[in-house]
Amino acid sequence: MDVAIVGAGAAGLATAIFAARQKPGARIVVFDGARRLGAKLLVSGGGRCNLTNRAVTAADFWGGNRRVIDSVLRAFPVSRAVAFFAELGVDLHEEEDGKLFPDSNRARTVLDALLAEAARLDVDIRLQHRVDRLVRDDDAFVLTAKGTTGRARRVVLATGGLSLPKTGSDGGGLALAASCGHTIVPTTPALVPLVLGGEFHRALSGVSHQATLTVHVEGRRPTRLAGPLLWTHFGVSGPVALDASRHWHRAMVDRMPATVRLSFAADRDFQTVEQALLQAAGQRPNCTIRGAVAALVPGAVAEALLAALTLDGRSRMAHLPREDRRRLVHAIVEWDLPVTGSRGYNYAEVTAGGVSLDEVDRATLESKICPGLFLVGEMLDVDGRLGGFNFQWAWSSAWAAARAAAR
Image: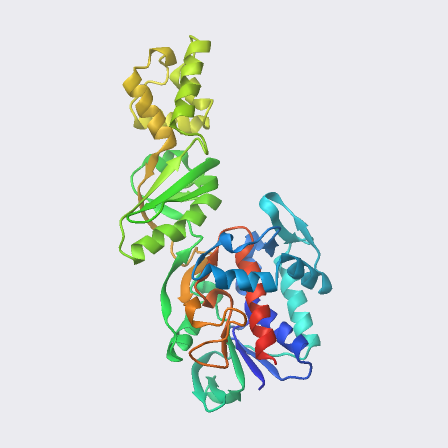
């Protein structure tokens, strides 16, 4: 084999295609332990596959060295990803927040296009061939899969992390990387709903609204995130909660105290919210406390907040004592979310952590520790926010590794 690719997910298939295009006639073999391909890709984006985003920069990602992330993204930016899929017959359209989806609105369209192109390029895809051993032997690698061994000049690890294990992700590729001498940054779920203690969230189950979440970790700069929040029977979900989850999890891994605070008023500060309540009281003498608060947040949230603060929402806003008014404003802009955990890898869209970016070449993603070994996609300590960013990392990292591995 000229290039062996371990893992036939999005990053693995893209790597195979780019490598075969880079060096026509090369023997490209893809190994995967699954019976059927593309399980994770097919469930992404609610089954519609959010392939990338209109604007993607290194600032949209967390994890390792941002300079490495920036280098990889610049080599294969969004425009090239859009052109690549257009070549495969998959045209994209833009939706809210710059998300790009296939015009068919079907993830199956994307998977079928990738598989068709791999077949056209004579890529050898071997299903139910889980690679469980990888050893460097002189100028080649020896791989063991399904009880047999093979040799490859170059190897690309593209098995992903541990998120959505029912699709086949079990961290096996990280173990292979570790066996080759790589450092694995501890992994955690990311883009996963958060579980809350207490009862406050239960009355709001099903309510969605714009919010700002701030994750405070002792000794670090606070991380402030904004977007839609969805209350559930177990806690909170929605884009802003999913984006915040990795920061809470990383703090837990580092054994650092962390708190998560919610602003129901999105980007409005204490003074702005207090002024709005005072204006409501001054301009409408009969305005109730509930009415004044419901003008700032959804009605259900107003009811829940007033109940939690034991304030009578039927009372007039003008009669609310200053101390209670400030207590109410503080609750609106800095409500403590009692995060006790998350729904774990079973519900996580990606994995945070992975192979350290300090151990790969910033241009090719070739291992500095084990020459000839390349790492792509979720294998690396890179995780993006919600909105197509992790798929763009898959395409960009696949391009960087493929063109070097196939040379």
